[in-house]
Length: 414
View 1 (cartoon, one colour):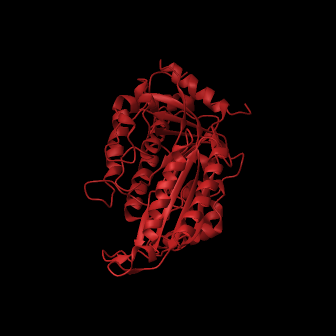
View 2: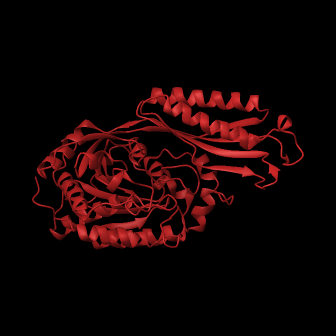
View 3: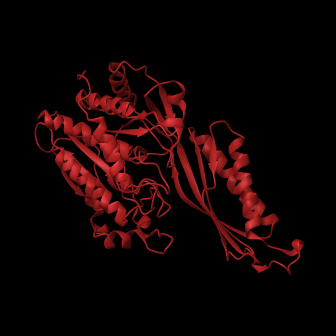
């Protein structure tokens, strides 16, 4: 196993701070796909990749891609990384910690002039969160070759399609076929990420090895009733779309509470026309369902759809349900988990296996390669929040484990 950490944890923390300054939100952090702030963050990451000895460029999907060649050029790669986009009013470690830690590991190898019997690619995925276009994992799906052409016509709140936004960003969506990696070109994918939960902190552990990423289903629901004057339409005669939506929101919570490990969220809702004295005639909202077992999630999804139809009929409103995304649970590969666990043990840390309730880019990359994840403890288990926090000591341990994993990595065929 490699010696003590050859990574600069203080620089990891400084660079997370630097990326957090690229934000459309004054005094906070919001950075969406194909934005000016996203370009600035990508440019900074590409610069750090080059300083670490990598060839680096944006690909046609806006991913920041760095490649560190192996003992000879053109070898299959061990892929590392995470995402550079954020949710609204985000924390500064979700995604960014994984990208910067991977760059730091490559920099350590480069300073030693160490080449491995495989290449390393570090990816800063342009879109994982799906905030702007409402569909997630765009960057990693492009690399995995699973992004259908129809997805490029998905539009943001301003009516702009992904394909148009790519062109305005200076990228060519017709070149997306060149982004795709084939099976065999990627030996494995590993991602370091904050836990986004309280388990590691509760057990006083700095890192944990992920067993699987929960599957998720996402819906967009549109309810259409009839707008009317708030003072003149009697209650029994109303077709209030927002009241129907409220019943649906409570129903989603009830369904999610009924099964252990199932979670359900209505994260976005919009009522029209949106006036204080007008009965809402149309409401659109989202539903996010997640569970470690696909069967549990699919049963809940069927129940939610059925209940939305029942509520709509009872309240005399029309319901349209669109499926935005459906990802099955993604198990991490046991052979990669064992290698991560050896790296954890070498740091004198007890191995803790745990699932990921949040989605990650590995869910898409699994289509072309086995995946592994390492979680780093975060304070209070808080994520997607400006209060998101990690310690420099934990960052050092996490990056040190990742470095050892890389240094001692053995492909499955070896």
